[in-house]
Image (cartoon, rainbow, N blue to C red; front, side, top):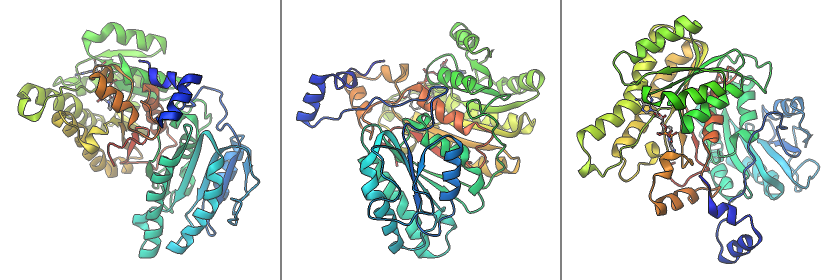
Amino acid sequence: MSDWYQQFTTTAPGRIAARRLGLPRPAILRRYRPGQPLLEGPALVGGASGGRLAAMIASLLKGAGVDVRGEPPTQPSPTGGGRPADHWGAIVFDATGITDVGQLAQLHAFLAPAFRNLGPCGRLLLLGTTPESCREPARAAAQRALDGFVRSAAKEARAGATANLLYVSEDADHGVESTVRFFLSARSAYVSGQVLRAGAGKPAPTADWERPLAGRVAVVTGAARGIGAAIAETLARDGAHVVGVDLPAQGAPLAEVVNQIHGTAFQVDITHQDAPARLAAYLRERHGGVDVFVHNAGITRDKLLVNMRDEQWATVLAINLESQLRINAALLEGNVLRKSGRVVCISSTSGIAGNRGQTNYAASKAGIIGMVQALAPAMAQRDTTINAVAPGFIETAMTKAMPLATRAVGRRVNSLSQGGLPVDVAEAVAWLGQPGTAGVNGQVVRVCGQSIVGA
Ligand code: NAD
């Protein structure tokens, strides 16, 4: 599934042609490899005065072997604070101390000079206080301003660099390590312009950041190919035992995927009446329960609304949405999902923005978001979480089937000017699946390179 244009722009004639014609030059993104350092250069860490998180982030990064400059709390300076570096691997700014609009100038003063030196595939991470928790209008306004700031900075970032914002509620300061690591590392290669909220939770300690899912049992539906196969492989790489689920007709490719990762296969049509009960019974008997359940199986049956047949409507809603509701009910009723359990549901940017010819698909994917938000409080009470991942344009069989022109445009209309890979979705799922990612609950994380499609 090669992107010939991206390859062309890595050649000398391609570079020259793209520059002369003002066309995008999609960077080759830095993706995670086991053993890779967290960052590819030093980190500049700073913050507005009175911030809660900069010192903690600096010590967390030092613990991860990162060269940290700009000892916090940093007084903003015209040179961008800290000792300069040729290329920052990451710039982290703690804006939690900002309580009014005037103080936002500290953000500008710190980042305006430093952002220029953000290296290829570097990371800008802003930390703020959840605006909904700010009672004073001036503080809420200033904190919410970070949202517009980071989405714009992400559009200005160059050479594969990303910018994201993490709002941390005041009771969640010590539960954000897995999330900070995700946003700074190469695991979030195709996540940019995103705003995430972390609340209180009970994060389980992570003994080994290379294998944060060690000892956990994970289920992935639709694991025989595409994004599901990548999720299965990534969860196994991170230490989980993976049970891959797919249709009996996909038995051979499913076996190939699970055999490679020493997992197990479970063949079932997830829309069958007894599928949730069978799955729950299998997980209880074989594994004593499950830690991570990934609802990935999904289909498209695209037609304009006026041409859509009943069967095309019903099949998409049944596979993409109703099966998830029924399986979740079975996991919770039977206490099959263990403490620190994580449910991750694959939605789509189509479910956020809508898409021509996809009334059925977009309805199913938006419905997933409704389900995740409604279930989140009950999940938190059990020390578990549920979140949605909404991929944008990902290079798979699904997108290969698109008409040529639609595919060519779909790939390019995002801040990274390229399609994502299945592994990019898988990395987000793996992070949300970690026992340490306890405070992220009821959220939708887009893996779309900041596509212009969707909020
Ligand atoms: P895919 O068609 O390559 O794989 C889907 C898998 O689900 C297949 O192995 C299929 O056999 C399985 N499946 C389908 N119906 C099933 C059922 N009833 N029971 C059990 N298994 C079933 O799709 P993909 O591109 O890898 O997409 C995976 C998920 O990501 C889907 O939910 C899709 O909607 C979502 N998504 C994909 C993209 C993209 O660009 N490819 C974008 C946004 C969202």
